[in-house]
Image (cartoon, rainbow, N blue to C red; front, side):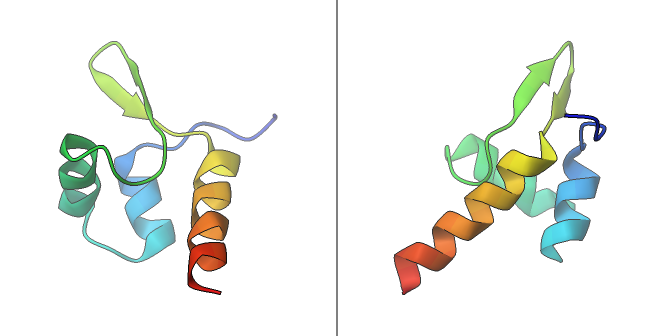
Length: 60
Protein backbone atom coordinates (compact mmCIF):
# COMPACT_ATOMS: atom_id res chain seq x y z
CA UNK A 1 0.00 0.00 0.00
CA UNK A 2 1.95 2.99 -1.26
CA UNK A 3 -1.06 5.24 -1.76
CA UNK A 4 -1.67 7.91 0.87
CA UNK A 5 -4.72 7.70 3.11
CA UNK A 6 -7.79 9.70 2.12
CA UNK A 7 -9.67 12.16 4.27
CA UNK A 8 -13.44 12.69 4.08
CA UNK A 9 -13.00 15.35 1.38
CA UNK A 10 -11.06 12.91 -0.80
CA UNK A 11 -13.73 10.23 -0.41
CA UNK A 12 -16.51 12.72 -1.13
CA UNK A 13 -14.69 13.86 -4.26
CA UNK A 14 -14.16 10.26 -5.41
CA UNK A 15 -17.85 9.45 -4.88
CA UNK A 16 -19.01 12.84 -6.21
CA UNK A 17 -21.12 13.54 -3.12
CA UNK A 18 -21.10 16.30 -0.49
CA UNK A 19 -18.53 15.82 2.27
CA UNK A 20 -21.32 16.19 4.84
CA UNK A 21 -22.79 12.94 3.50
CA UNK A 22 -19.61 11.11 4.52
CA UNK A 23 -20.00 12.37 8.09
CA UNK A 24 -23.71 11.47 8.15
CA UNK A 25 -22.98 7.97 6.89
CA UNK A 26 -20.43 7.49 9.67
CA UNK A 27 -23.04 8.31 12.32
CA UNK A 28 -25.31 5.67 10.74
CA UNK A 29 -22.58 3.00 10.39
CA UNK A 30 -22.89 3.15 6.61
CA UNK A 31 -20.40 3.95 3.90
CA UNK A 32 -16.82 2.97 3.32
CA UNK A 33 -14.84 1.85 6.37
CA UNK A 34 -12.85 4.63 7.99
CA UNK A 35 -10.46 4.79 10.92
CA UNK A 36 -10.02 7.55 13.46
CA UNK A 37 -6.43 8.65 13.77
CA UNK A 38 -6.41 11.12 16.62
CA UNK A 39 -9.20 13.55 15.84
CA UNK A 40 -9.12 12.81 12.11
CA UNK A 41 -10.94 10.18 10.05
CA UNK A 42 -8.89 8.48 7.36
CA UNK A 43 -9.80 5.99 4.67
CA UNK A 44 -7.69 3.41 2.82
CA UNK A 45 -8.38 4.12 -0.87
CA UNK A 46 -8.51 0.42 -1.79
CA UNK A 47 -11.14 -0.18 0.92
CA UNK A 48 -13.24 2.67 -0.46
CA UNK A 49 -13.02 1.15 -3.94
CA UNK A 50 -13.92 -2.29 -2.55
CA UNK A 51 -16.95 -0.80 -0.78
CA UNK A 52 -18.14 0.76 -4.05
CA UNK A 53 -17.61 -2.57 -5.84
CA UNK A 54 -19.69 -4.35 -3.18
CA UNK A 55 -22.56 -1.95 -3.89
CA UNK A 56 -22.47 -2.94 -7.55
CA UNK A 57 -22.69 -6.63 -6.61
CA UNK A 58 -25.74 -5.96 -4.41
CA UNK A 59 -27.52 -4.31 -7.35
CA UNK A 60 -26.62 -6.96 -9.92
